Image 1: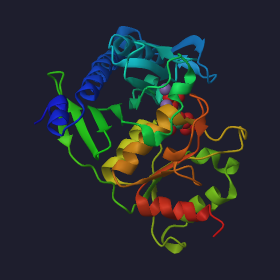
Image 2 (image 1 turned 90 degrees about the horizontal axis):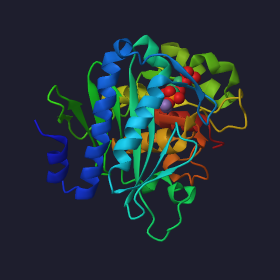
Image 3 (image 1 turned 90 degrees about the vertical axis):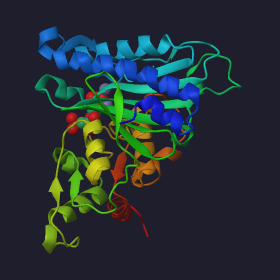
Image 4 (image 1 turned 180 degrees about the horizontal axis):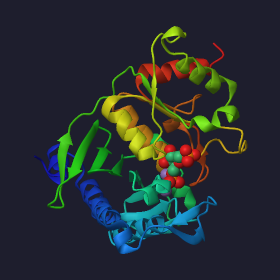
Length: 323
Ligand code: AHG
Ligand code: MN
Ligand code: MN
């Protein structure tokens, strides 16, 4: 089995990018170890703080953020980072080549019940013409990402990674190495499985309600087949299922907070996951446009997300178009 860095080098990946991905994996291994200890290390539960989104921070949100921040800032390739758990970007080497945005611990409501969580990351090139430290250098559309991925901390820890040439998966071995376990992941085009938080049904747009209502009608309805449903409340785990066996995952706009485009965050949830999904042959959309084409105007901006099996997402998009 091939080591992560050897695999990347044999596939002509830029050596500095390989080094940065290796750095990220040092942090993710540390997070995986901490998660394994759980209550034994006294790291479950919440802090008294809230993040910039107004969400209560779990102890492990803060620990994971600190681990990633420290390890990344020690690498001179890093120009700066932006995190769900940091109000503002943090800057590293002024001559660093890369910017990293990340959700240090996704699905953190699952921590205390010992259910899967993950780390999501996105890598951008720092613009060469911007010398001043500021948020602007991060505000690049998702298509500009040079790599993205996640590490799912489940029964095993699995890295799903794209450097823009397909998606590969690597499993964390007891030796501490990430080893290639799935090459060139392709998402099945059709599915009978959907993931949405049904408790928000009454807050959705009519088009989303119509789509889901038709899924629920099953074989007797317009879709002509019976669907199954999953909701793990951890985007990493949901996207991993979609990459592994297909499906559709959506967290759409809803009327609970109408001014927000959605719950999920564009720069460290929507964009990195969208690149993975597109690179595996799926679609990722706001329901109205490709997520990867959005020009961000804020590092913490939110986005409506619908992603997964190509034909199923295309059907969802038809419910949203005037055609
Ligand atoms: P985070 O833990 O980083 O704040 O993200 C949680 C996100 C996402 O992973 C998941 O799909 C969604 O929130 C779950 O939201 P609900 O609790 O509203 O279902
Ligand atoms: Mn998250
Ligand atoms: Mn998070």
